[in-house]
Length: 248
Image (cartoon, rainbow, N blue to C red; front, side, top):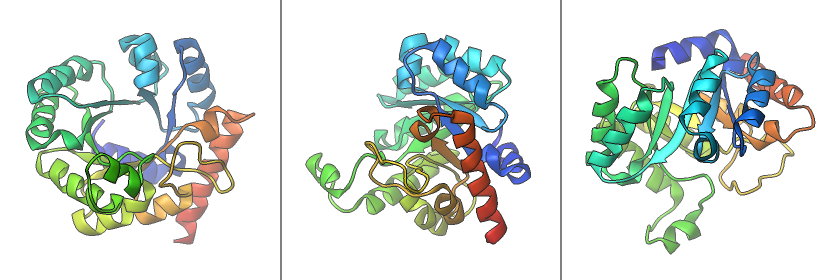
């Protein structure tokens, strides 16, 4: 699925902006959520927890339900290793695949080129700064300046190396749109409906705020998957997104 197709889908149905994060420890639980939510969610995220538990079967099983997959592995290694990993997991048919932008331009370019050579390539997304990090966390690992500055720096690096999109927190969306224009697909975790607990997320906003800032797709996990009624929770978020679009 290409970026243009994704954007066309969310234009037709604002609820398709929602990527439900299947961050659960077993495939049966993940598929139960995916079956319950596939009519309201646009995509499902298979991340490290589920992929470590079930491997490629997780992607294949979710896709068999007719749902696109966001494969969030955050690849980060030397260029040749990352290129090989992209060739391997890229054949699974995921729509989106993440690599860490901090791996550098050579690694990012290797990932983009490996993806482009596949028959049905995933969109390579450069992960900028994790939503669990703030200024003090970055300083502790030797990165000076606020997260916003680091995100913009890494975003420019990823886009210039061929990444088709970026993963950033809601707080950086507007600045990235202003600096990079409409081309990059912006996939945004750290989305919390008003009144919901933040858990380990720090740089967050509501779904409506993220969309108004220019986010394309919103990654939402625990506010949906740990809700008493996941379908109702996802439907409420979709309604909030639709309402925000009407008010713009």
